[in-house]
Image 1 (cartoon, rainbow, N blue to C red):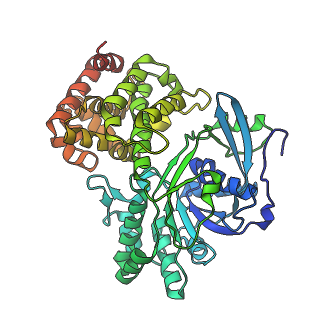
Image 2: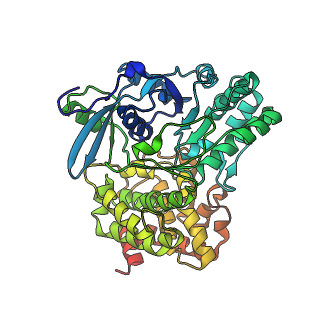
Length: 478
């Protein structure tokens, strides 16, 4: 390793795979892989190395980059105290990415693999946003249900491998979601069991009764990689086309429910518990919801980075008021934090200038993120009689962003899988705000809630009439 760069403190030749991880993005390599690297550096769990896997075209590109450097990853922590680089070696190999997922199914069928973990984004679980339940009619799911031996999705590969293990009399693996989803273990279970039921109801029943799907809360701000991050790796003497940068803070709270054993996660600082849900709600509502509060306002006001948005008193005021009045009242404390203490931590993390997390990244995929991060707080507020006006303003800012151009007329590049539909609807909503709330797959019954719909319509009309800054000022009473 170059001077000042920490490398794996163990013999990687001694590693044997025990975990297949599907979705080798930046977050996994800055989070789960780091925890495992720490364990291996303590002389533990060398039989729990990672096998990388993927089912999408970008996964093949990531495989090519990582295989060229023996599956090592550069992780650079960026905080007020400086920048610290390490090279993480917990991954033993990366499976070929194949349209029919044959290499993935073969690896998952091996009894040595005892955990399958996933980071496939919030939108990758085939959940119907209107119902919050698994959608068996999604075209990709229907296709895998008709063709279970050559599935195209990660869940299809998991079902095919569980079928092979069941037929061979092998213990099933644990399926562990590491995505930001409320009740991510239950959501993953619904996807696997629901997909299996389309082709083999008996297998579906066996999975439901024998496979563990632990819930988890995962947390670390991890920006996208671009030229700036590659240059940063080079400044440490590392030639890595796919380095990861992240904040120093990380947290993992994990339900202790595993089918076939697990690493000693707690020795690396993971909180093992029988109840993840209060941690999960705190993180998703306050942090992920907070990102949504600053994202669209920040982008529309011309801020490239989250810390720049936080330095804008209008956006900082918006975040503070929405969090304290409309999000925190619906969050319970956890042993480590009260909601107020967690918010203080979040405000500091969002303001970290070293991270350079872009507002564009935070604006990404609102059609999947709003129903999970913002709208549950709206529903709680409506049910309890608490205010929802600030959250309605957040939805209005998202709608304005999706209209496809900034206030100075510059185009906003597509930033959502449903961008074309969102843009067309947002442009109609300029004169008919109710059109936006008619996106029932996102808003469900909230469109019929007078307090929310009236506040949304008023804010959207005001944004178009006087602009984002003045509208936020109006909310803050300026």
